[in-house]
Image (cartoon, rainbow, N blue to C red; front, side, top):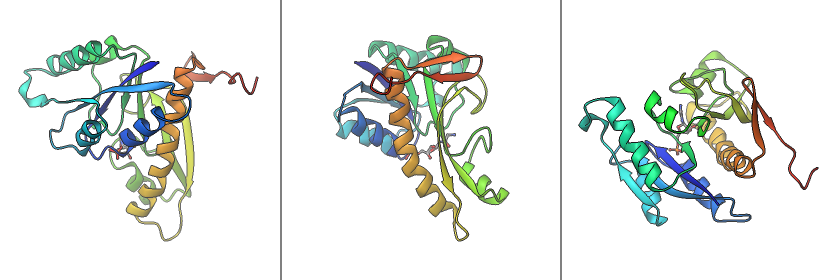
Length: 206
Ligand code: GAR
């Protein structure tokens, strides 16, 4: 079974969705550890309550980002992690972590990338006035929200949407998209052609 390590900074609803998906149906993957850069993050409670090993790391306690990430890599390796899933992890991944898991780090972002990268993507979409936004699961590269796209889900923007109503509808789609992307990876259905992620047909559809 694919062993997944999750990095999260906050609420942990995507982590919850991943745990739920991992424990239902085909059992294609398992979340084996949760690491947070925020000691009070609800994601750590979610992990603990699910019986998963959790780690709070304060980046400020490490001299350099490289040392902080080296500790993350050490934890991930201890748990024999094959895939790293960023789930509301609010830091740019540096070379230390990227090089330890090349092509094996995924992220979820609350917009249809490449539109609205960075912080407060839902507010950016509302302010811009787009009629459709959504979420993206992508592989992580050295840039901010720039890596190859695996899954996207579209969400219509309604006339009376606020950041909070729009974010809630996007979040529902995030909770579907992330397990879907990891399941495809676990089944070996994803490959790269340039920056395009090619999704092989599943055996049942072939
Ligand atoms: C999610 O909406 C996720 O897409 C977003 O943070 C939220 C985390 O929620 N991530 C980013 O904006 C990354 N750039 P959660 O902690 O409940 O999963």
